[in-house]
Length: 177
Image (cartoon, rainbow, N blue to C red; front, side):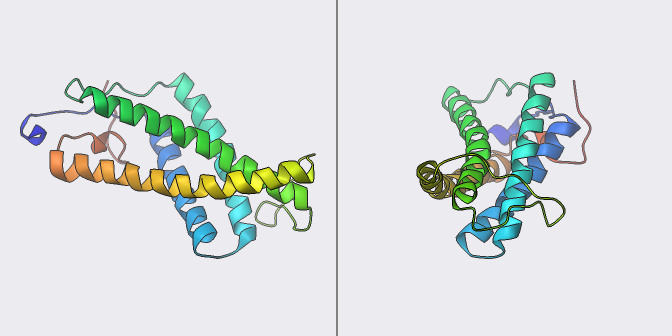
């Protein structure tokens, strides 16, 4: 079992940890509203917030590359982690944009950021808005599945393998170099 070997994880930067947990919380809020029900005004504002934070996260990641995975992580796990993160980034961009397109095509509902200021509609056709609706719906289910996979993998590392991987992204620790 991996947990028997000592491992001092190279941590993510504080900025990366901030982006991860903030976006994760907002995604969970929006999944809840989208799948169970709630205020669509909040759903839209949170989606726009996720889009802006994701842009910031990408810039942060380019300027502050993540720490490498430890040598003991198997090749298939590296591949799975890489593709999971790529899919997350894709969905974190596509879901808000497709929702924005959907609302822009309908133009029946206000689009603002928590009532503080309006967000302009995108200049799109009803056909594109309809495609945005389909993409948004399918993407929401994909995001829910990906979140479940990600949480399951984190729980596996934390409680079954006990390999210290999860500690790299937990807030409160000091970054090792």
